[in-house]
Image (cartoon, rainbow, N blue to C red):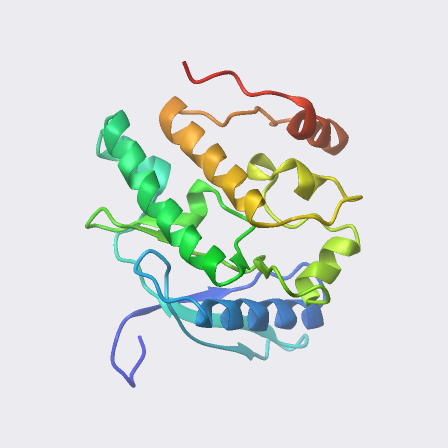
Length: 215
C-alpha cells in the first residue's frame, strides 16, 4: 500500500543469484526502460530502490498492480475463449510490444507468465528486466550476455538467444517469442518440447527443430 499518492501497488523483488552489483544494475536498467514506455498494454512503473538485507542490499521496484490477473494462456482456458478470441487477445499484445519496438526497447523474455490479462480482459506485458535497446552495446544486460549467461526463458528463446557466438539479438527475437506464445495459446502446448533435456540438446532443438504445424 502506497500512502502518497494512496493506492495499491505491486512490488517486484529480484531473487538473489548473481552478484548484487549486477542485480542493482538490472533493476535500474528495467526502471529506465519502462520509463520510456507509455501504453495501456504495458504495466507502469512507479519507482525503484533497494533495501538492506544484511548482505549488501536487495533491489526492488514498485509497479502497477494488475488486479485478479492471470497469465494469458490460463486466462484463455479459464474463460474458454475460442480461436478468434485468442487471436484477438494476442493482437493486443503485439500492439504493446510494437510500442516498445518503436521506442527501441526489446523485451527478450516474452512468455505467458509475462503477459497477464486483467479482470477486464486486457493483456498487460510485464517484466522488462532482461530487456535491451537497439542502441546500447555496453549496457549491463548486454555484458551479461557476452559473459555467456543466457538471458531469458529457454522454452521461448529464439535461436539467436541460445547461440552464444551471435550478438544479433534485435526486435525479431520478440517476434519469435510472440509466435511461441501464440502457438501455445492455440495448441495448448509449446511449439518445441524441452522438458528434461540437457542444455546442449535444448540449444540444438531450438535452433534445428521445426515445430509441428498447427493445422
